[in-house]
Amino acid sequence: MKKLKTLEQSVSLKKNYRSIRMYEIEQVLDEKLSYDPIRNSDTLATVARNLIGNKDQENFLVIALNSKNEVIGIHIAHVRQLNSSLMHFREIFKILIMCNAASYALAHNHPSGTTVPSEEDVQATVRIIDAGHLIGIPLIDHVIVSKDFTREYSIRKHSVIHGLNFSKPSTTFTDPRSLHIL
Image 1 (cartoon, rainbow, N blue to C red):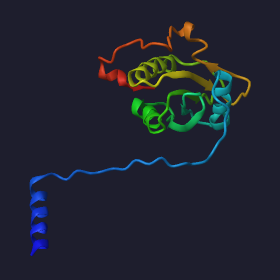
Image 2 (cartoon, helix red, strand yellow):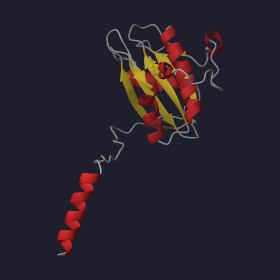
Image 3 (cartoon, rainbow, N blue to C red):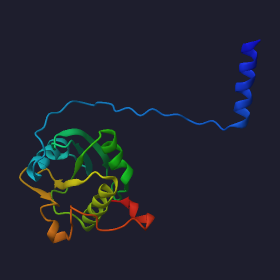
Image 4 (cartoon, rainbow, N blue to C red):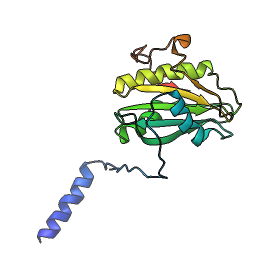
């Protein structure tokens, strides 16, 4: 008789409450790679070139770093469509939070061969820097690579030209439309 009462109680609970989905998030290791700590834009560009330098579509890498700037996770967060590219902050910060990153670096390729950033690249970097400060995970650099292994562009190295400050946020998040980047 006791089992019947428990069954009745669980049935009545289902009538009174809506069901809630429970999720479990798990990281899946694709492959193991070994890299030196990211100490400068050259090291970051080497990592990016090895992974996306020869791709024929624009790929966007998020590189999670520990407090010693050692790579603890790499995620291809986005592959650009032919003529449009939309990515949300959550695509970048999801991997960083899951890896428990202390900081991060970004890299993307330009299949055209030029590594000069577009205005869209620079503005996206501004908003990404701001979001990182808001969450407490600072961006150390954003590099652009191409098939030409002798050329890369560090947005941090050229931050004065672009009016960027990697040390502090430049905006406040008052406009929800500013959360969409690239």
